[in-house]
Amino acid sequence: MTFIDSIKRLFSKKPAVALPVRYAVGIVIYDTVSSKALGIKRAIDDEYFPGMWCLPETMVRLSETPSQAVKRAALQKLGASVTAEQVAHGTLNREDHILDVQLFEARLDHGLPVVQKTDGSMTQYDEWDWVVADKLVPAARSGSLACQLFLRRIGKSWDKKTP
Image (cartoon, rainbow, N blue to C red; front, side, top):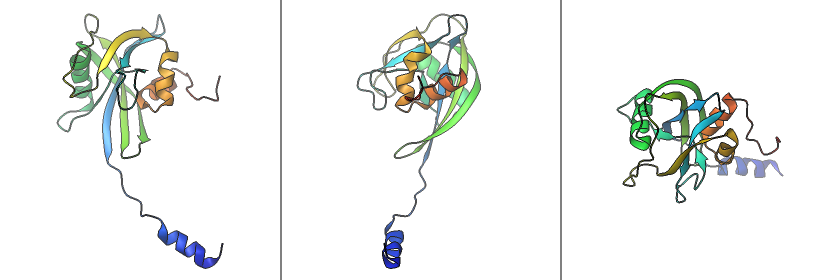
């Protein structure tokens, strides 16, 4: 490549554009005795994780704190009241935004979750179950940052190269 070609190539690149940041929370309700977490199965038409087992998640609204978002999501999506504390944090570059996720470890204040049917204004969950960490690996490999943070926290790899 000539010097002129190098200069042309340098100036033909598009300038970097700052991507918007979207803030979200993930909720892990983990039973250390059974080594299982409360997993939710995403709807088959889910944009990011169709038919996959994930952790409950929600976007943080401008008018709320991450802790408030956890309580709202637990109530709206699982019909449950929780007490939670932040245990991990991470970011992930997506095609059109940067995803910033805080993972909260929660405990149910009372009762068991019930999958709530939605009007389409929020992510639809088809079912919930107590799942082993391996069930969350496909979502982690597909880019679920909440699943990645949880699996990292318990020392479980989701990398395809690692057995």
